[in-house]
Length: 194
Image (cartoon, rainbow, N blue to C red; front, side, top):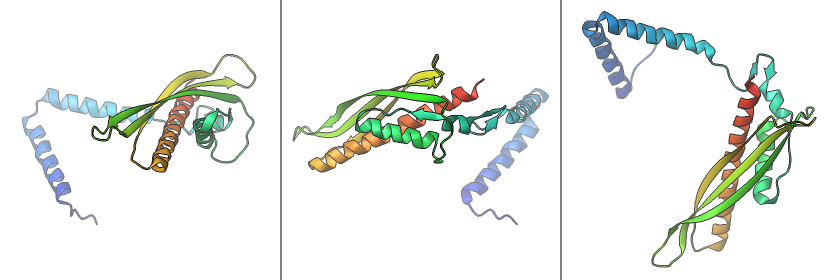
């Protein structure tokens, strides 16, 4: 048995009843046909959806992503980005045969977003990172895909130096996670596309 207790849900159901009643009473045959066509098309398109990370047409996306070896990037941000990519591409711990190498280079810049006019100190900063990636076959040849992604993370600054350093490091980690997610999604969409 289903019980409606939420007032907003009851109002929504009531509005739907009123709207469908008006549609039935005041609509012409042309409007009804348009509605039926739109519903038919939407139902027809539901079969076109396929999950990106499931096996499709002989392409095992998850297996292909696990076969990517991520080359280490320099620096602390490079370490965070490399480890995040390794986890997102092959978080299983399996060691399949490597088919691709992923090269990532990045550049970062910081900007002071807000300055306190009384003390003259920065109260907020922004850390922007652009990562260029290139997916190469291990056997050699032209890149499978290449491109760049950008991430921006803001952080607050205060009078405590340690807190400022830690906030900047947290912004680097957030950027690394965002960049790794964007790179994984773009690589997966390239592998899935025939």
